[in-house]
Each structure stands twice: as structure tokens, then as C-alpha cells.
Amino acid sequence: MGQRVATPEIDDFVPLAGLPACDIGRAYTADGISAYVLLCPELYDRDGKPCSNESGRDWRDSDVRFGRFASAAAEIAAGLVDPGHNALFLTFH
View 1 (tube, rainbow, N blue to C red):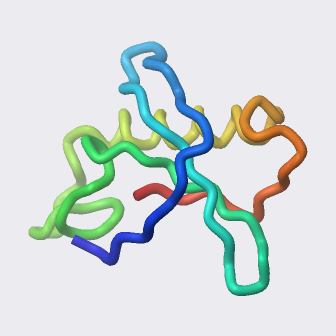
View 2: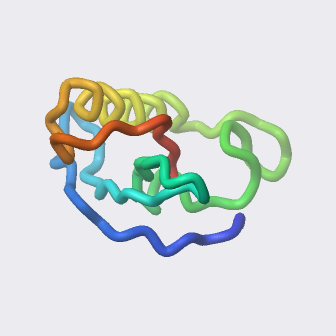
């Protein structure tokens, strides 16, 4: 598994349309830019690469993984998470 970064949780996402609940954290780059981190170990804390397992095959639940990520991005973009902060990017952990 990749390097783990301590990320304070700032909000959470409830289960939605079959997507699991998860938390959202905010970290900062060296330049002070906000980066939101989707914290959902059951979907993202895995060996392999972001889109494939150790054998190079797609994850069987890639649709769920992308759906959770996309719904979190939409809520952040709509200002429903951490109002008043802007983020350059969203990543998962």
C-alpha cells in the first residue's frame, strides 16, 4: 500500500444509492493549497495501482469506487462540504 498521510476529517458522506459511507479530510500542499482527501478504506486502501490490482486487472468494483469519488467531487463543487474553502483537487486514500 502507498504512503499514508494523516488527514483531519472535516465532514462525512452518508451512504448514497448503494455507495458506502465515507469521510472527507483536508490537507494542504507546501504552498498552502487545500486538497480534499476522500477517506474510504473499503474502496481505496488497497495494494496495486489506483485503477488496477497487483496483477494489472481492473478492480471489480471500479464503478462503485468511481461513483463514490464523483459524488464527493460534486458535493464539494456545489459548496456542500467545507463552505468557504476552495480546493485545487480531490484525491482518495
